[in-house]
Length: 560
Image (cartoon, rainbow, N blue to C red; front, side):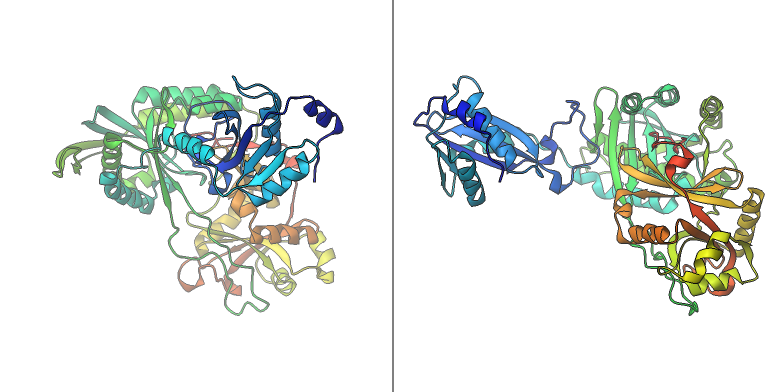
């Protein structure tokens, strides 16, 4: 156990010891009470985890009924923080208290009692256990009562309707087609809103959803600011200058199954489940003067519900044409909007239009920025739509089978050298499964790139600053292609850890497999004759690419 320095003990013994009885305790506070490091009053868009709730440490003089010291610490901080707060209460108490030693200390935690007895044994302070600390109970009660809780994310009256349209949006998945510069206007003329300007996010697969800007000026100004900004502080400040409502989605990570079965294939390769991916909607608003808040008020919830329904109807009418090109399209829809004051819905006409001229203007901004940027462009358009991409390990028997099969191959002498030893469970690989025509087209495109050179996992941050890694495929001509984003939960998962450990066993040698059979029973379960391409490559360190930590820019499809 850590004890006080002798010099500290001598200094404390010089203080007068009063007859006062002090109470001390530490208690969990709601996570929203946590004070951010920059002292900002911005409400975070993502709540802290339950485990990260802050703790408040209090030392009070029960005889005088006053607080001598108070500190807010992280829940993971040990008992040493309790002693630090006690020393502050002794030597530098809050006014009007004077420095002094107490005669007795009361705590309601047995473990803390024994800890303090050991630390304070040379100061002549009695440490006793009691079941309750009435004064501290009262102080904490006032602290919690004085803090006003956030309202619900969506007012209860409008939650069901909003969630229904949000689920509809998730099923439509317009981010599989639309880019983040393609603007769709939604004319409301209600709830003090004239027209909302919808931007679909998620084409690059990082953050999916729709942002509804309250004005064209806000959208354009934001894009100009994000292009001209450079530092992380500038980007964060720019993000908070948006004036919009939003519906984004969090997708819980699907649990990946383990690897290929033993050779022969036995007709199955276990992979990702084929069920519909669960989703969790995130609603909120941003405003330059309000900052960000992860909840909506009545009129905002109604407006967002109506805007989503109109966008869903527009998508269902025109998605085939939008898939071909982003031309001039318009639709008028009758939407039954909830009412704040009654249960009677109001029928309103909503006009939805594409804005190809504004889309070209915004796209030109990014193109101009790319012209001035020497950083390599990360592409995401190589992979066929709805392709299944899965990390797995191929047993050495299957490696031998694929190396001798009559399929397109890119073989490495390094694998020839290590394969006979058969160290580890097999060769780590990345499987890309799609339809036969698309698989053959993909193989042809890879050939035009000069084959596949290597894989790399590059550190990055998502739109909210959370750490992640981007899976990048480096082609023979040095082009970079994104094949996946891996958040902290995935990186810490056993499947991902085992895959990388096996790659170390094979000295960084891995493979890429391209297979057909994406539909029906063969989805995720390709038979040997489904495999059309096999590439032996290396994993490289992110320092070899020299990209540094990449940042996903807010409201963009993450141009790096």
